[in-house]
Length: 62
Image 1 (tube, rainbow, N blue to C red):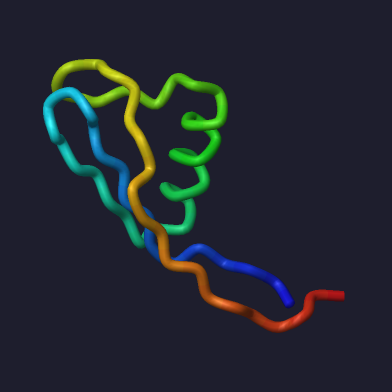
Image 2 (image 1 turned 45 degrees about the vertical axis):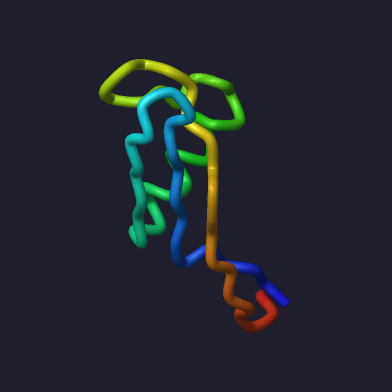
């Protein structure tokens, strides 16, 4: 099975700003920024934390 993330939500622990997306390209960019430790809040520049995601199962890819 192939996993696909269809929704993701990040929240700033400092100011409470919430960012969410259903756009696969945006989700991938945010994931990469988060893994690098450089995904910052646009309001206070604290590190964003993932608070939720929805994962769906896809078909096997050969």
